[in-house]
Image 1 (cartoon, rainbow, N blue to C red):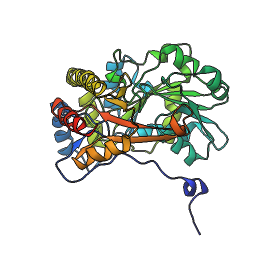
Image 2: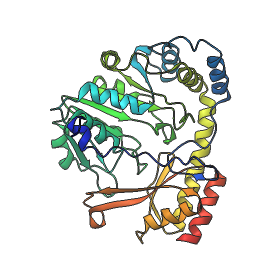
Image 3: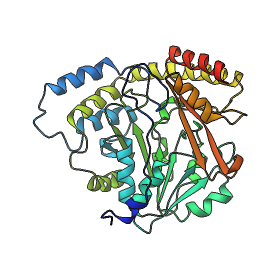
Image 4: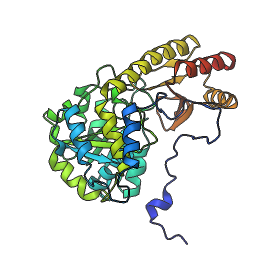
Length: 358
């Protein structure tokens, strides 16, 4: 006999990337930033640790919201801090999706969206992408029009491509909310700063961001949502009272105030991304042009699992990913390697190994 809710019993659960606890690994599997955070972050964490840790943190993250608002050119009331952007996605799902409310997301993409919908008992529909990772609007719009919540990661994972404003506006549900997940937005050629919030669909849009990628703070769980105050006000009712701790609030505030440090690291990653993409192509891989801090690579042999295993035997971790029920893939299953852009030295180790393996 199980005492859990039926939705939980049926759920396989989301599987994050491997996090080895021993040393010696070249870790290119979970899209972490290979460079350290701003020195201002380390100083802020130290100050916070010496501060009033016996007291509860600010439940609204006021200092962070003011700092972020200045960078993003919005009012602080448009921002909701969260314990990582995954918590923000959870809050959004719990806020908008009831047992009869349809949720949709592109597929192949970030499967956590489906997990969150399943936990709510909300019907979840995969919006099929084309072989070039574009949309067939004739296929997807009849679904979108019935949705209460549509998740769009932009850039997408695992592909790394980014869709246009026109695409996003078209994918807004008429009687629902579009969640634009910009976890990798800072790595794009032209990073967004919330422009969609000022468009004709602005009152129906929520933009989510994380500090795990461009700000080098995967170890500090922090993210935020940006939306019209009428939406933010409702989301505050759903969040935990003190969902962000004092250390993470201090770290995130310092990080977002040091844009120069973040942008310098992003520039290095973008340069290495281009070199990695070119090198993989020369080894026979097909690489989707990426706007993120990773690349999606497939090989004509289709031996991606064997390539992953051979790399892992050399203590080099990439992410082997497989997506069932993809109509345009061989055997209705798409698989490949998602490779995080590491330092130049880490990428050299990866490429040297792949030359031996492929």
